[in-house]
Length: 149
Image (cartoon, rainbow, N blue to C red; front, side, top):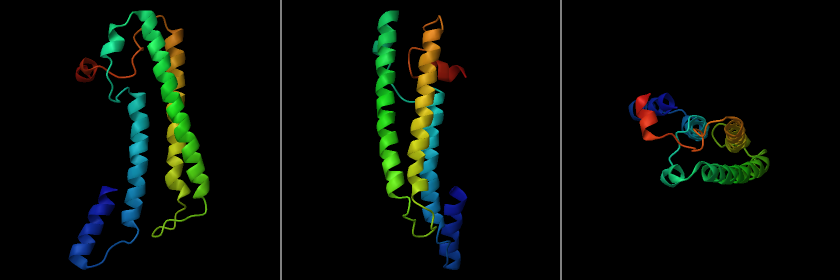
């Protein structure tokens, strides 16, 4: 993506020409990169969050808060899935002007993201309730854990 954008800038300013599809393709790749990065962040517990209140709760209330927060995340992922599915179907026959790619490829990343993140959340909930420790009851990494790595 960076090479395409940089190469297009060089071509425009030095040779007075450019690659017509590079801006559009870099935008598509950027959208995909952001959504795939969100999946990776969820997998590694790297999303921002405040766990001050949750860490102060007793273990049973921690589990209740964990379940409620994960159910809310699953609900939002359901909304993302439904919206992305509708947008993908709506744009199945629409094509991007420069590349000619179906716009369904652009909106399809919402489907991939919502299903992947939902799988991560469900697996994590299952692992938490089958393990004997209460170490996985927050959805974020603490600052100390990040700096120890």
